[in-house]
Length: 616
Picture 1 (cartoon, one colour):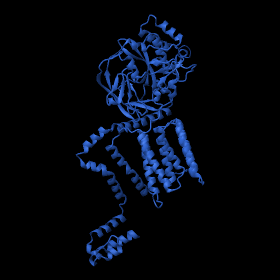
Picture 2 (picture 1 turned 90 degrees about the vertical axis):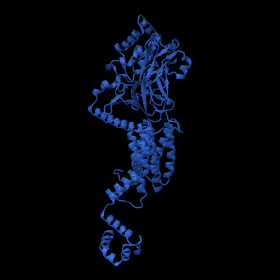
Picture 3 (picture 1 turned 30 degrees about the vertical axis):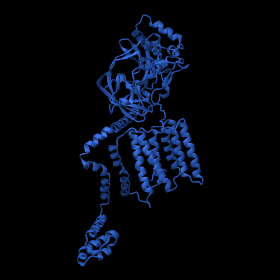
């Protein structure tokens, strides 16, 4: 298939399969992408060969491919598995398209893929690919329904494209009248994703998603200093005997320490911002400390202990979430302070001795500054691939290897703070992000995941400390965080920077598309209809404009001498007296003979021109 021939149904179907496969790629893992690619290559070569038992082989192959997909999904019948098998069915169907019935079934599956892709992913690339699938499938269905082969000249090409593009204004009308809504009927659970922070962390936990550039959310403002963009997702406040940190549930903390937490009535301020949160199939919501969700509060839960937000249901669609700043005083009791001091007896005695020796004659603030200065002045390195001797060996990291990344420094700092009698906890989330210079918004990806520390200081409350920031840029060997890595950006090749600019601009276009798509909700629809309800002609135009445009276009395309003469002939029959008894089924010669002598003389030249142009 070295040259694409659009009149060839095989070539058209291959284009549809390619578009469909690309439209599903954004939601697939690398292993799944390779599996789809292999399935597509296999289907392509099966399509080219012919043998008697081909349909049996394809049936067996179909079962095998669906089973492999299930294995990739960890044997979970999730929503993602359902979506992926539709794509696989389209690829399998392409392997055997030897009759018209199979071509139609292929087209129907491709339409399903188009709809599923459009619903499941709302970015601009997927939307354009879905539109391409839709247009190509309509063209394909039109052409395979023709009884004879047509020439692909300019006129026929425009005719086919106009037929397929007729669906576009209809989609726009549906979009305006039926806004984006959340579908609450859920048959299959969504599969887990790698987005977010794990439920427990230890040394090396963040390394599992270190290379992921999967987008998590956009911050729709640049009013914040990038150094202050610490979006909190989870807090880790309890260390297990194996020195793994876990996050205590809000209801557990409330039942145990409800008398130990005193909070004042919040004072709502005017400062606001919003984010576009990607669908991650979990409940967490990233937020800045001191901000709470302003709209739809009945859908979210705020943790007064951890200052984090959760959605009541898994987030399966992109959504815009608005936050508002608030002031609230918090006081914790002695029992709760003791909870934030707990450590298992498996903690190294060397760490304990170091903390006790260096805390002498120092205030809490002085000791915390001393620990930060110790990280800064000694040979500690930020390294994504440190040498690890044992599981969660904080002592070996602190005294020997001195190489690690954010959870190494945050976890060690909390241990040293608690050993010195300072209540503390690990906070995890996303830090810094990258500024999109075209759209003036911040993009946060999974590679921006970060861990820092909060310590409790009396008369001040929870204070953020980032031990990782104590490491000088000269001692950063490699990092997963885009903002931490900006010191090395100037060393990148010009070509790489050019590619980054293209990617940044594409992200900007996707951002603008997403904003316009998500902001058009039920309220926007109601406002739109209120504006046009007193203008009936606008409603008429919205509903019938696609058809009016189609017929206007059809008239322009058919505007030639032959059609004008044919129109005048039909008009002559229409206005002729009934006494002539001219029928629509009459030939031109029969119609002419039924005219009286005077009328024959009047139209004689017209009939001669008609016969010459129509039948010559």
